[in-house]
Image (cartoon, rainbow, N blue to C red):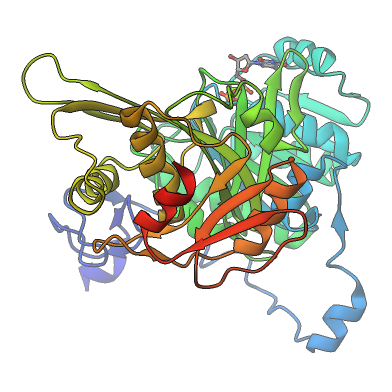
Length: 448
Ligand code: TYD
Ligand code: MG
């Protein structure tokens, strides 16, 4: 009947599922108002390109074929996050806020990996990119730049140049002529994403797709792009600070725990091999209200300074203000501080700051945060050669944390002499004096 000829479906911009009927709330992901009408282009993915069934291969064949070679970029912070370099034929989505350095990193990676690369930039002119590459000291012989933003044109250039890599900067600016929506619309992103995927899988080309992130922290346009690609990397950081963290949010070919640390300089993104040193560089080790916490970024310990200021609230309700830490967690810690340790902060303004624009969301930082606040309140410094770690429970107990060994070794490496840690799971590290505690009050006895 008529229904068979209707091709229009309703596509959810959150989860990418399609439905034959419109719903106010997506039946799959329960988001409201995300369904948009969508007509797949004639002769779409389902009909075309499936004339030959792909051949069957045994796992053995595939592995001995050696197709899964990795190409390292030599930028070790990037290689680590990728799980050892770019895998042939894989599709990497690089997300991040505007201005964070995605284009810079992609261009540096393209130059460093050393293969023929097509850099598709619909956002900037070829001159702008060439100038940037020059500034980055990136050798440009093998990198070709195009400002084409039609997928059909890009595909043509790919078949002419036969690049090993191509960069799409950004997915929100390209479109296919088969769709009638504007670039950046869900249907366009979906179509183009699928086409990029097809090209990569059939040609063995590696693609880096750049995507802008909205304020809410999701890649603008459909989330489904994240489901389609092999690897999702996010470049994070505070544009007011120079350091950038590259995290793998998803990785089909490696761990998602890895973090790369970069610094934005005049010559582009520079790897930071010793992030702890960078974050502690300006620390005043004898100041009250400061504590050092060995945080765990993926599998990597990074020492950060936590600062607190507790001052008498001059009027009204005392303020609680945090940067880089969870406000509700702080409220809980302040309650423990009053109730279990008798340090009264109810009438004080309390400010907590994780130095360097770093964000910490692990409860292992509890002891360092509570000690920084108490230190400021008591006006008594935490010993400068001591690191603090441990999760705090409501009863004031100090709970065990993961990765203690790595954290302690990093502290030792940076010249710290003592560590106050939870009793459970503590392991000795040579040259570092451990104070193991069952409660926060035991820890406070050791610290103050
Ligand atoms: P860019 O890579 O264009 O960010 P994105 O693609 O994520 O939007 O970089 C943005 C900022 O980085 C820009 O404000 C200028 C700065 N920058 C440097 O500080 N040093 C450099 O070498 C480059 C290329 C950019
Ligand atoms: Mg850019």
